Image: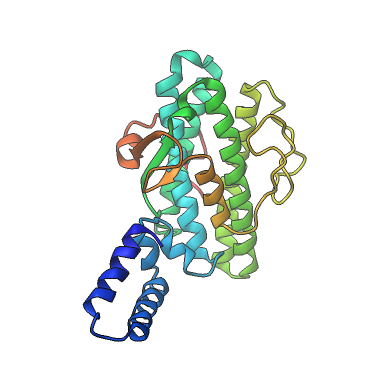
Length: 271
């Protein structure tokens, strides 16, 4: 249990100290079950994805929650990267990342719009300092992160298509269109790293990562949407809390207010 949960359950135990040990254990167990069923146990332990973890894994709500949160992260990283490393990035790479920031922000705005109805688990993201330590570190993070997004949107596309409804087919097209853009981002990051950018015959879903020299080389894709969160957390990112590596928490509202716009970015509104 976390420190917060321990405090909560110790309080329950103390307030019912006149009861038998058996009765106190039942009260603690009942409280834990009730909090868990409402998704509050995760919140009490400072877990932004607490509600997602206590509901069906690949539900539409969970997918849109994870996707919206991932786009918060992507907007922040792609906006800050050029700010922090601008003079160390070549002109083409700099412009591509800045354009990607604009596109990730647009994706987020679509996901939280009335058309989709998603809500991010948090808009506070802990980014490891190492992400901005060099152009190579930033580009590697983008290449790996964009593959996570590709996998997540392919998963979403499958779930939405299986619904067999007009809304499901519409959402499936939305996620396909977003996934295509994430694939471009990945390709450009790899190209800037001196690797083959257009290296996929098909966008990778469950297959193992074949690109050498990445933190995820050899790792398989995923079938559960929360695995996207696990991968990002293992890289040191934190959602609404400190991550596992030294870094800083950034707020989406503050960073996105200065996300750049490129006049040549087109197809800005989805049909």
